[in-house]
Image (tube, rainbow, N blue to C red; front, side, top):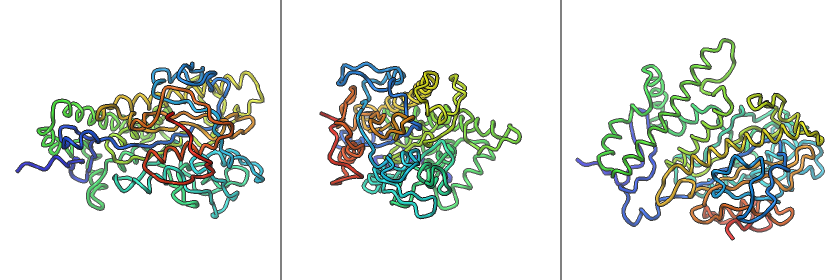
Amino acid sequence: MTPNVSRRRFLRGFGTLIALPAFESLAAPAAAKNMSPLRMAFVYGPNGRNMAHWTPERVGEDYVLPRSLKPLEPVKSSIQVISGLKHGKAFANGDGGGDHARANATFLTGMQAKKTAGADIRVGISVDQVAASAVGQLTKLPSLELSCDEARRAGNCDSGYSCAYQFNLAWKTESSPMTPERDPRLAFERLFGGGLAGEADIARAKRDFYNRSILDFVNEDASTLRKHLGTTDKQKLDEYMSSIRDIERRLSAADKVAKDMPAYDKPTGIPQSYEQHIRTMYDLMTLAFQTDTTRISTFLLAHDGSNRAFPEIGVPDQHHGISHHQNDPDKLEKIAKIDEWYNRQFAYFVEKLKSVKEGNGTLLDHCMVVYGGGISDPDLHSHGDLPVLLAGGGNGNLKPGRHIRANYDEPMCNLFLAMLDRMGVNEERFGDSTGRLNIIG
């Protein structure tokens, strides 16, 4: 009996459920023209920027990427640099110190965080969760939250603000943050695990015992599917499964490093290298979008106030420490190097999305990805003229390849409201929005 593959979206095996990318050779002709859903992602980088090396001098398409953005040269035509946006609710507004906590808390909510280190936290629903409430029921996961920091939901982290503000980007309600996943292995299992209750844990244990890949458990189903695919889709399936296996290999390598290092208190599955950690998370986001496992994702690279050092690029100093640069040329130079490093990682993500063919274009064509932070000049703790990039084509509803300058002090939430429109989410206002930012004209 021939299986009904025209509606197949998963490969199944013992305790395993792997979502598949869309295959044109399995779609009805009318559906083939409209196979690509729109995805939305937000990536946060900490501690402000050296804005002198971030902001292009010219606006429009005829602009030159400044030093900090140079790593994005290969994908310049796929991004918009947006200057002039402000998060007014991240300023003190009578609440005193705590700019790092407010920068994180306000970034996706546009709301003033209640100053408390207790359990009575309150800020607002984040833009990603507004979108997830509208489209999340269409996918396996309503949204995916990732971080390279260990999650914290309590404690006093910044001048009387709860750690919950600083270590979470996504907020399902005004008092309920969506805890991000730090461990790539657990994120991987969340994306690709499945089956009956308890069966996924048994399958994981069995795979580990026999040193098998998750793909080994769906080979029979994949072989059956392959018979119904055209040449191009067969190649697409092979590339997709290779991507999954590649991530598995890297996670296994991280496991081995963690196990072989004596007295090294590091969770299993988290790469030693920060760069590898970030890129593995970017790969997981790509796979999540590619398979339509989710259409909404947030990624906290590091919390604002992070004291991570970057000796691999000649910056052994703590990031937060040198961010209070007081116009010291040496500190400003080190900040610029860190900015370049983070942008190199983001360029990797954009190129990864661009490498995935989907429909008549690429996965990047069907994405809207915001990369930025809640502080511009870190020495001033400024929340105006924020560093913001917008990558992707938005299903033809964005106009990448340019630098646009918003009206002075235009709320960041005007960008978010425009993005919600493109997701088909009808909201009159969001956060402290005053209108909609023109990201296509």
